Amino acid sequence: MIEIDTIYMVILGLLILSIVFCIIRVFKGPTAPDRVVGLDTINTLVIVGMIVFGIATSSVIYIDVAIVYALLSYISTLFIAKYLEGGEF
Amino acid sequence: MISEIVDIIVYILLAIGVFFNLLAGVGLLRFPDVYTRLHAGTKCTTFGSIFICGSVILLGLKMWFQGSSDGSVLAIHTAGALIAILITNPTGAHAIARAAHRSGVKPFGAVVDDLEGKPARKSKPMKKGAEK
Image 1 (cartoon, helix red, strand yellow):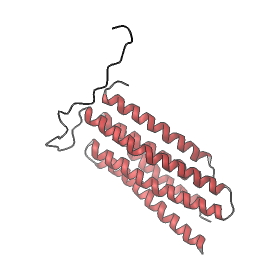
Image 2 (image 1 turned 180 degrees about the vertical axis):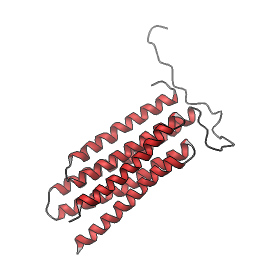
Image 3 (image 1 turned 45 degrees about the vertical axis):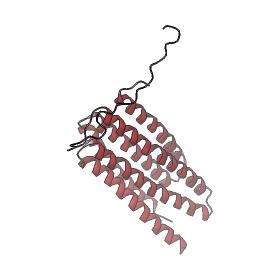
Image 4 (image 1 turned 30 degrees about the vertical axis):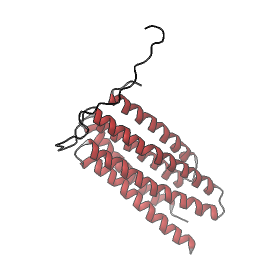
């Protein structure tokens, strides 16, 4: 059996490090699309982190939450992009 | 015997996925303008997510073959999450890139903009019914 605790906690730590880089870009970003790119990347990394956490605790509920989070973050990204474009809805 | 080989494959897939997700963060910090940051932040996370979800699916199948009924549910739901990521991530990146270009952000160091002057898609005016 795979050693769940140490390996998956290290992987979650590296994912959180990547999320911290994205947060720095969200705060520093010179224009508005930079911040949107940072938020989109954070969403994908959170989905992957949820999947890794689900396999680490072998509970399926985190993966279901990840599916719903993916669809909702896609809708929010499309909405913000439409707002930046300046068009009507 | 088979179990250890599957464990080694799972480790390798997890290492590849986490490496590309870290590259996404570093590229998002270091690249000079919106389009290259979008390139790093979207493609690398999609590629890394494929490998991490693949490792989780492989581990779920291994748990299933060892007799745990949780493993099959884990593998199938992870495949659903992977399909959701694969459909939504490039589409969102395309929408962000189009919005950035139409809101006037130039690429870093660009001399010629081939799409300059092309009119944006005009949306039809809202019909007000019987007022006019």
